[in-house]
Amino acid sequence: MATREAILTAAEQLYAEEGLAAVSNRSVSQAAGQGNIAAVNYHFGTRLDLVRAVMARHGEAVDLLRARHASEVAEGADLRAWVRCLVRPVTEHLAGLGSPSWQARCMVQVLTDPVTRNLVTEDALARPGLAVVIRGLERHLAGLPAGVRRRRGAMARHLITHTCAEQERDLADETAVPSQTWSDTANELEDAVYGLFAAPITHPHTQEA
Image (cartoon, rainbow, N blue to C red):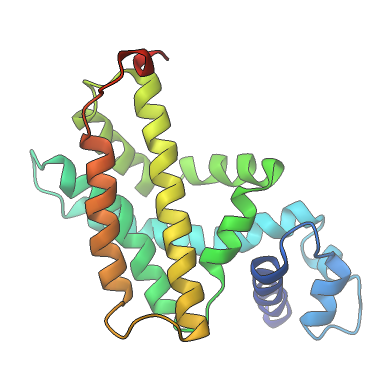
């Protein structure tokens, strides 16, 4: 178990700082302090299996927080309540990791790789907490055309992911302004994502699916 955790931690940091394409399983094994350079293959299999495991370690923890937030949403709650369930589990988990951390920056790298992006997105959508939140959001966004809902959902994902990665980087580099905490980031993201979903459609052609 300790070896697996060491490999996961080393892989996450390397992926975050160097990108997926530049990091081999051999380099992860070495960074994890494993004398056997095939340790990653032994414990996880392919590089894709390792990336999936790195993301699952955090994704499952975030989904537990998301399920808790969703369980506290009152009957008939508004759109903002469901946006809060989308945003705050992410920032709460990242805050709990301390600094430096690499998870948010690693996620950016994973989502820019077409193969890992599709796999990790499928895994995320299968998690029960996120499924509940998506249903809550969709009830309030039913008036938007399907194509608009889909594209705004993708915009929201990018906004949350990249904003959290920037905050994580600033905290690791000690360049964040003193008042900018993860809670501050959550507040700003909640406002921004709510505004994104609630914005009117001003160009009719964007309604096409």
